[in-house]
Length: 328
Image (cartoon, rainbow, N blue to C red; front, side, top):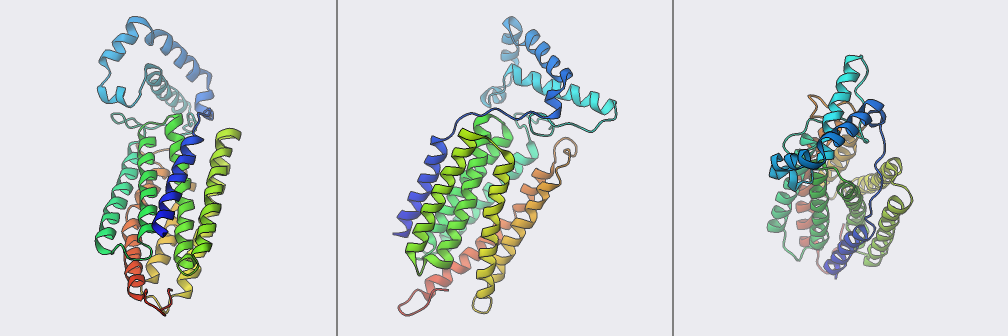
């Protein structure tokens, strides 16, 4: 019963994201508002992106660039971005952002190489530990299906994070944001099932419905009202804090019963502490490594500790799931 409920919740979250996925205009930044940048792009497009010049660009373009959707106009923006950065530095001004992000040195088709690599590593770590979990924990464990569903939601989010940092488009940006929100909300559901739902399934079912409604409302607002980055961050931070305190309370109450409780506490503290790296927001070192990439890289080892806790806890629940034995 739990497995079917978790699977339905996962499909509904994905469906909600797909239904509400529409394009929204990108926000402007200091760099792309500069007349020198805009004039450079107009001139480049007029000169290189029509007629024989365009056909020459397309014939010389590497296949991996074409497959990831790089156009002549995109290449003009990239070249003019660096022209503008050079002028800023020559005049002694700080490096500006363009279209809501720092300038990054492109590697092959990767717009943000370090962040794309970090997202890929997180996804691989999640996949590796999911396989280890499934091999170590029997399907009869009460949390097996919920944890498997959570892992699939996480893998989907890391996939879109990798795609977004490889190629930033309206579609990939929204999928990155919406799938990240799905992970945060599903983590609340995971916490609810573990702390309350095993003894009171009706509570976790009600919370699951509320979380689906919250996700749908969140995506609807960002899609139809305003793609507000500040609101999105505040909403995710609020849900994250609820998740943090909920898990920490559970860890404290079970510290004398479960010898592995510290793994859970350490994971939630690390995840929320490492998220503070986002506040640094500095221009990328060597035009590759920014605060966002550092944050993603720092979370890779956390997957191993998290799944170590999940394996210990799932085996504990399996061993104590007997008539008359209380589930912690």
